[in-house]
Length: 308
Image (cartoon, rainbow, N blue to C red; front, side, top):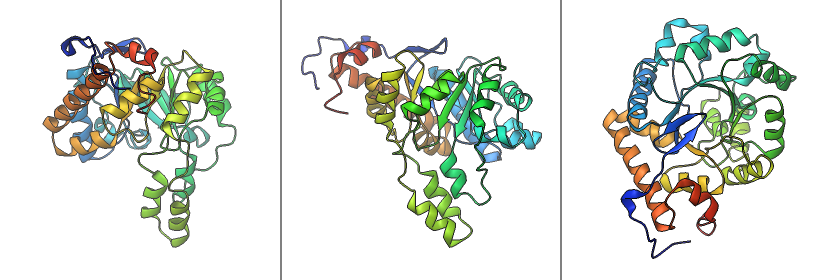
């Protein structure tokens, strides 16, 4: 609830945090989006430059294309621009059932000098895609094997349909260290794939499932209830600093945004910088107007329950 007398100096509010052992200037992740094309390279480089300046975490888009064509690897290789950031490599988990293994994962981790590997889970998207990869059988065992052989932690991430507490429990038991809920409420890949469909059947299938999934807030609270201490990322429909702060108040450690960053990065590095300044101002304002000096206090205060 709103605090009309915060008893704080806004300039002293601290929104820094630590995640996977690295210090972040704000509890923000530039969520995985793109790679593999000249335009994607420009976008990734602009994002990385700003992430370095503000000490934000960043994920890249699926690197499958870089495994299959090494010439596009440089569209993801942002480490030289952002030597200090928390940086995540990214691959579709289902590729482990399509000849990918430890070697391919090591390759994409090394390409970025990544701090962690995102395995994204996208069963619905694969169903709508023309010739999608829909054999998810036995995947949990392969994820388990991979988690125990990689030198970096594995992050399990949905792509906009959410991860339930039951699924999170299975993934954590398999060795996954971080959950990124990527809940429903943001970009619908079923809808995107229906727009790209090659026939009316696929188009209609995508339209039917356009709103399918677990809402982000529900994912955060249910996972936090069964796993109080795991590193937890909120994403899926977060569009501003108020959304990011609400997600943290509900129990997430950091909040991931994609669409706002994509829009800004398509424009210029300056636009990305301006967006981050705004997000930081919004998060700081939430803390100030709820009477909390730090993110930990915000989580402990239940201050946003009426606003969430």
